[in-house]
Length: 157
Image 1 (cartoon, helix red, strand yellow):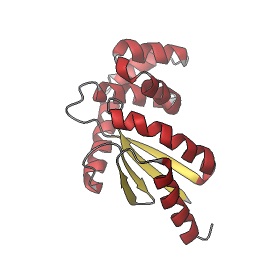
Image 2 (tube, one colour):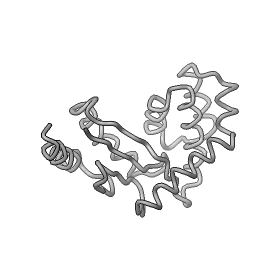
Image 3 (cartoon, one colour):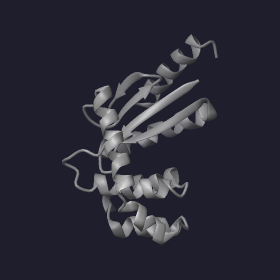
Image 4 (cartoon, helix red, strand yellow):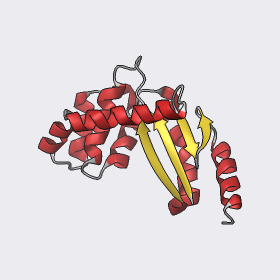
C-alpha cells in the first residue's frame, strides 16, 4: 500500500545520514513498502555519478541494495577501487560489472532518474515521495512513520 521513492546520491553526507533513519522504517513496515531508489547525483559531487553507475551495474546482477549498503558504509572512499572490491565481495561477474558500469544504458538510466527528479521538483538530496507526498532532507524516522501511518489509515489498512 505504500511506495517510497528515494532520490539520493552516494557522495551526499545527508543521504548517508538518513540511511540510519530509514532502517527502522524498512524493519517496521517490511513488504508493505515498495522502495524505489532514483539516482540524483549532484553536479558538485564528482564521485556521485561514477558511484551511481557502479550501483546500477550491481543492480543488473541483482545486488543493488547490498552494493549500496557498502557504499554508504564506505562513503569517504568512493572510487573505482572500492567499487571493484565490493563487486568482488558480492561475487559479481567482474567482466559484466565493468562493462555495465561503463555502458551507455546505465548512464542513460541515471540520466532518466535525474529527469524524474526534476519533474517532481527535487531541489537537493535526499528527497522522498511517500505515495506522492514529499519529504525533503535527512528526516528522522518519526517523520516517515507519521506520513506512512496517515497513508495506511487513509487506505483503511
